[in-house]
Length: 199
Image (cartoon, rainbow, N blue to C red):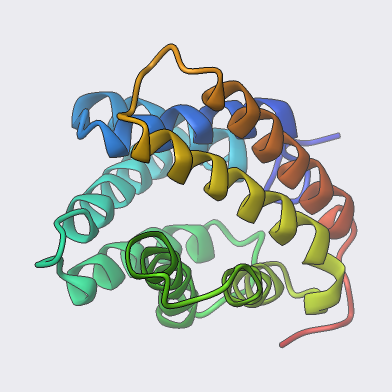
């Protein structure tokens, strides 16, 4: 099967995202860029020019979002809009880059509330992820519920790892990696065939 945004390798993508999250929290920006290249290539299978540009936009979005409390959500959304514009231009997913970016950064916001202020629940976070996946892949939100739940589990492990000091040899990272692979396996199963449903 031709590689594309509905036919990604869940193991490869889950492992690369785990590495990217670790690099983000350790503020290892060069490593995060390398991870972003791998994630974008594995997840969307765009040509190399779009992959490299997209990875750069993902890095810049994360750098805009990272400061606490003085981050820049508008800049993060703009960088992710640029990323999703590349995805849309590739032609295999039909989406509005502005709306996709809004939903992407919304789950970042909900996660930060939960992680730092206990101002949201796992259900809130799973709901934000379902809304993103449903929009990007044009499936019903309930179809991606398992993918969202596994990704929330990965975030909980990541949060525990951060609270413990971001130790790169921590066994928590192995659990996070497994949860992300499970999440992408469920997502691949849900979006592997185009759906008539849309949001």
